[in-house]
Length: 216
Image (cartoon, rainbow, N blue to C red; front, side, top):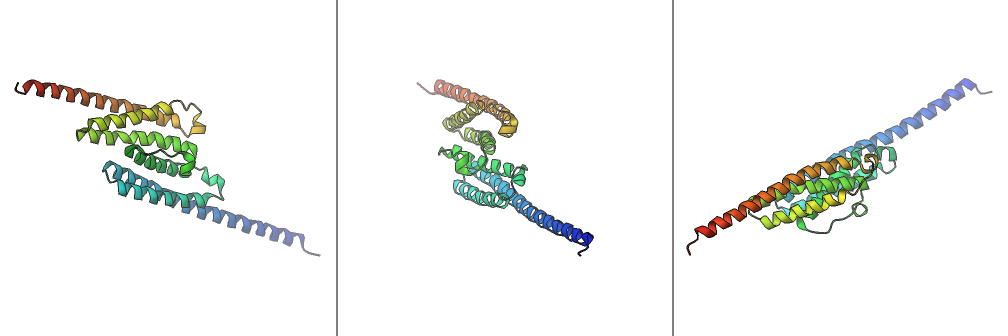
């Protein structure tokens, strides 16, 4: 007759082996996803800098590379739903959305939605808000370059995004903290509106002075 103690010990050892194998697979997936998420965020930051430098080809290439890294992170986490909800994937998706939509807002091209970008809706909403905030730097660069009309167009795009986001009135647990991101956008928008208004007034004053000084 088999020793019950020995059988139980073997049973527990087998269960332990199975648990370690599953945990090892989870650990490897997490490490892979973390590395790819960090890569995504780094590439997105570089893409946004390229946008501000008017290097549109570089921006598109970097966004494409960021998407490839993000897809690898999503694939690694696909079998591990609990890890996918841990937060770092959301952050990478949000940064990808920010970069992708910053490119579109500056270029005046169609904005793609969350399903087309393959990201969660909270990441898309927060990424859109941050993309609109990124327009401030581009707007100021255009104003410094004397491109007043272009600055006004960028301000209008920021206002359109803000006007839409304030209608998304749901708990932060559902929107990923969108209310806080929208509040930050409002502050950026107000400063940008002030900058554009000041520049318009200065341009008008300069034009009036020049017209008076011009010989009859």
